[in-house]
Amino acid sequence: MAGRIETLQGLIAQDPGNSRLRYMLAMEIANAGDLEGAVKIYQEIIERDADYSAAYFHGGQTLERLGRIEDAKTLYRQGIEATTRNGDSHTRSELEGALAQIGG
Image 1 (tube, rainbow, N blue to C red):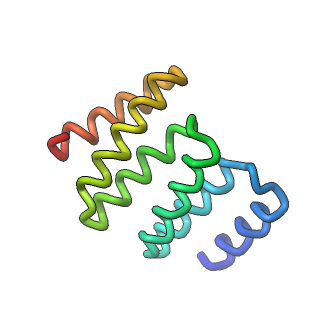
Image 2 (image 1 turned 90 degrees about the horizontal axis):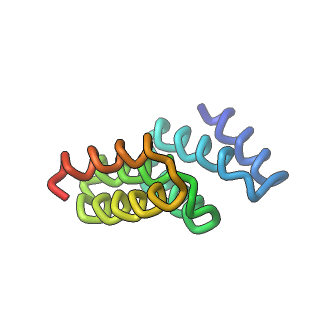
Image 3 (image 1 turned 90 degrees about the vertical axis):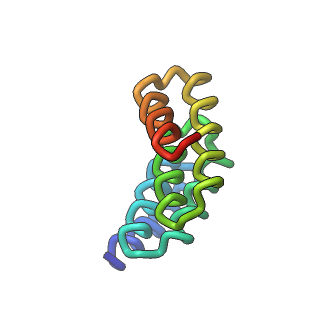
């Protein structure tokens, strides 16, 4: 897993604006058990690319795993706004379901 993380970090260094690479890195870091590190990367993605829908959903899921339910609700709501704006109805549906599941 560390090899993939290092590879992704190298690719991001070459293409810092690539949200997909950052998303893949966040997923790898979460899978390696560094949930806080993954949340930081999801937040970086959203700051750089507010329409990258998957970062809201997986960022919220990671916050839930950390027990940060209110933060997850906030991120899901922001994601619903973003997906409404960018027309990503599939991810919007996932975000609405996740929010409903935690009582948001």
